[in-house]
Amino acid sequence: MKTLNKQEWIKAEHQKAVQIHWDNLDRIRKLETKISDKTRKISFIQKSIDLIEHVKFGYEEMDHYTPEEQRIFAKCDHSPYWEHDENSRIFAGNYDVGVEELHIRQKQLCAEVFKCQQEIDKHTFDDSVEIMHRDGDEVMLADKYDELYVKEEN
Image (cartoon, rainbow, N blue to C red; front, side, top):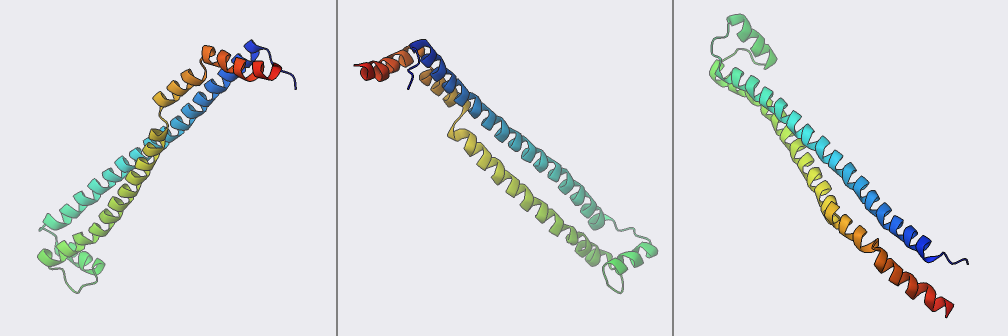
């Protein structure tokens, strides 16, 4: 096996340390993109929840339905007549199921964001830089080369 000269070996080992750092940066970037995507979805879901709650509030609070509107609501609610105080609150309550499902989805996304952040925290950018500087240090690599190849020659 051909032994590389000292400078070539040091350069190759330094490049390995730098490449490991760049690979870690790519991993972090991908995780940050996932976090950004999931937090954006959480925000969009909140806008939907706000809209549904606004519509629900409208059904609960409006007490000036025309007789025609009351008949339509009664048909939608499968009841023979529309009693505003009772039926409108029940009709509005149907929206609670949708709101709850959206809250559940938000919680799932939060858990996914937490898992992604944990993956980033296992090996952060600062840790990666520190390891790159430690493993790519030319003085340390020169000493390591001497230990490995000088012993082989003797």
